[in-house]
Length: 281
Length: 258
Image (cartoon, rainbow over all chains, first blue to last red; front, side):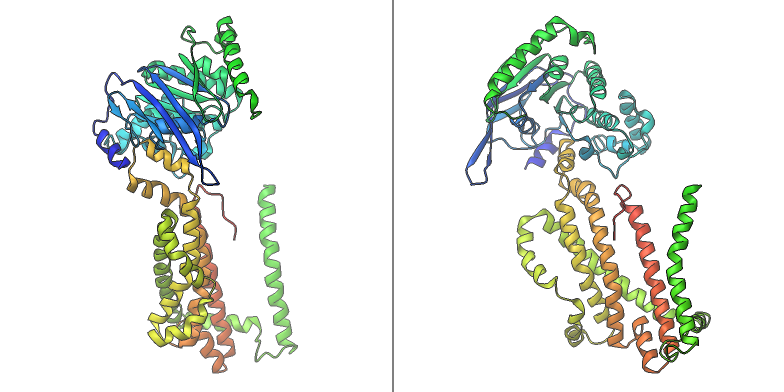
């Protein structure tokens, strides 16, 4: 049923010019615990994301951030609540939302070349001759600065390059909404700053709606228009803070600005005070 | 260059033991330390091998063994991959077949030969069946584990890009479990060779196993050894071929051991 739903919406390959609002209403998710009882992971989370907005969701690790994002992506059914994109209920994998995974090494398919991995994102939706499809892959790879590794295999690349490929692949599907699950947490610190600038550049260029889940407060502030704070399990949204930092954001200057540091102070105090009772790094 | 030298040395060192052993046997047989009737000198055996080859006598038994082995192997592997994928994918199918496979799996397949002969007689059907049965289980277990070991992230990747069930099977589940399936097939290939030769010995209807046993029974000891050499070379070639195939197909996987 979920697959049929995905099919019915994917007929028109190109997303509508103005993407719809993403409305998350009262999402709850509980899992079956080891003793048979239900364990609540998320409790009534509501979010409203405007088309083209960059929303970050921060929370302590293990609070259910990824679960929330997977529910939004239609990869996991919620126990309660609804997700709507534009005027459609999201059930199953919606055609215009793409999920960018934290573990690029598990998300990129090792038996496919980089170009084929990118092609995997659109080949079933956009019918192109092989040459045209390869050219399209190269375009997207060029966007992340990797046109020259199209014929390599993912495992021949560094971690940062692999995540770039994953980003190129996600964008090749031309999503209205890009859901990012801590995509920068498994690369080294410098590469991370690099990828931050890259994702902002691509976001400015393509104007997709971005929802980023992270435990890194600095990352959330640097990238997002608004930052939502999740509590410990069961996760709920306690605060939504507008960053109001000028764009384009500068790797060094923005992070050193007084406004940035004030936001950082505010967010960290929320997180440390609320999560303080559970010393869960 | 140093690497090359080290490699050459490694290969050379590996050759010392078999060559030394052959020399010892040669000396032992020629000096009558062992009875050359039962253990002829390797040089005489090699001459017999040469004889079998130039006379073309080797072709028919070898061809039959290869044919029965590959037929049984193909059937066994295909059935095991199909059932293994289903069992790995569906809990219901797993629960349905698991008790039966666990009952049959530890059974030495050669022990089934007498019963199979009752049903299928001596010859091709019985031999192919025993090979297929023997090859089935290692591939089944490996396929099952391979499908279960597929990263959920890979499946979710396919889902987030809107791929349907069929595409997930074809483009994720099958290739992702290929290294496991191949590891099972490697074990099965060895088992298959054992079983086809055993079955040929019992059936006596041609093939390398039959050739080895018939030669021994008619006191053509040198010929019996010569057929063993042919069998050993076949085993070696099959292993090499399979390793090559494994590297070709599951090239992204670290080379498997064993």
